[in-house]
Amino acid sequence: MSPVDPASPAGPVTEVPAPDPDGAVLAVDVGGTTMKGSIVDGAGRIQHSVVVPSQTETGAEPVDAVRALCRRLRDDALARGVVPAGIGVVTPGIVDETAGVVRYASNIRFRDVPLRALVEDDLDLPVGIGHDARAAGIAEAVAGAGRGLDNFLLLPLGTGIAATVVVHGAPVPGTTWSAGEVGHMPVFPGGEPCSCGQRGCLEVYASAGGLARRYARLGGTPGRDSRAIAAAVESDPLARSVWETATEALGIALATLTLTLDPARIVLGGGLAEAGAQLFDPVRETLGAALAWRDAPDLVPSAFGTTGARIGAAILARRAAGLAVPDGWGALAPVHS
Ligand SMILES: [Zn+2]
Image (cartoon, rainbow, N blue to C red; front, side, top):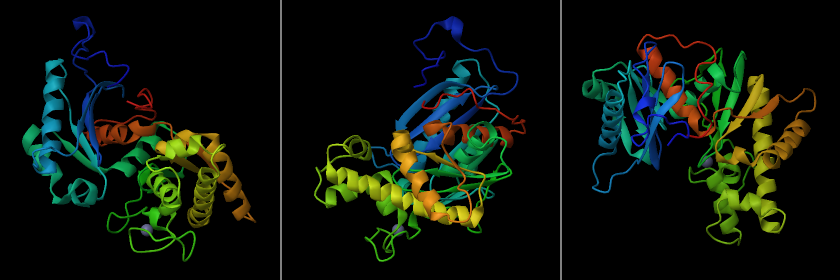
């Protein structure tokens, strides 16, 4: 729930917002573990949030859980006197934004799901469908760490690693909606095996999931997540070694991306970026050392954190509804909500 949630059912009636003449929208971020939905008002503030598990215990189709959350958010909005102008839904995987179809998303078990048509039928509202990381890139471009830049690169460091290349405010989708799968960029040739079938992939070493798996495989205390490994760097030589390899892998990958794209800035997001200087300092060092004849681009944390994909979904909703998205829209949303 949002800490600035004046519309919570337990809240005083006097704080229920009036219908927003500038157009409130609904925004849904479908993840592998949870789905987060919000009512975002016309000024880009999150007014109300709902978090539900992505998988239902009954074994129902995952898409039904998404549709149920969309209907619930619409009903929540109407109960607050807010008539939403549209809805945006973002998912991981291969998302054909033109057709409004999720072609494939392994961790939510979607294959060729016509999500836009389904949600349109259910809610009778304009619907924008998007990819979660690209949506986060849109949010950073409009109101976050990429605001005002011709181009930048956003890498959310989570369970896996993806990159969103944003050029003039628009994320590059690729020919088959698959751009940015840099987690499988080989950084240590002949290195450790990846679940994708290759060896030495970036995310084997530098994703949150990869860090935890490597640490356990090399003999560390089982069950430690990336946050616990980061916290143990001073006292545990194995944690330090795993952490140093992660930052080295990331620095090498960012050097390749810098030479390919010449970005104005590189933005790191996801849970790992919350490690702050412990992550950014050694990555900057490796990146700078790898680039002999040019300067490294700025390396900065994401402005939106885990809220970015949802603010991006809200922007897609506004666009679907024909509403303007002024520069800075969404900047009032909290970083974590
Ligand atoms: Zn791989």
